Image (cartoon, rainbow, N blue to C red; front, side):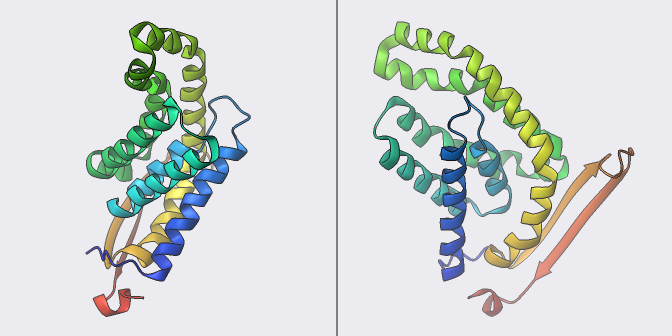
Length: 208
């Protein structure tokens, strides 16, 4: 059962998670299309309730707008990140929690398709010919984006999912039963293990 109350700890967590995404985006901005934003939004959409991760997405977009000003990419961010977390939370959540590599595939495809998804916004600003020019010019960057997302996902998704599974239920939910399937992660052996954690508390205990 999800408690929608905005408690102090929830507000602080949302603020810290937003700051983490924003600061890492700025820190890695010197690397073309290498970012942790996609990964962190995916992880947040898996373990945080939808209202919380949507709040993070909105706050992140506001920070981007304040920092960099208005541009076509800001409009795209305001559209794509809420849609991304909605799809992960409502459509792909169960599949990713059961098979972590599905999350890596989604991140990879998202990176490769990032420029293509942006063409709709480019058309509004620059017309069809301008949008096509931007898409062709950015094709190599989309290639980098997809490969970088894949490597980040493979390296980080399992350990970060385990950490989030341990702590997020204490902040947002009354009961959780999350299973993460890992394969071949122990000493390079093709083993299979399942990690399960169940946490139950009364409603009064959850209200902080």
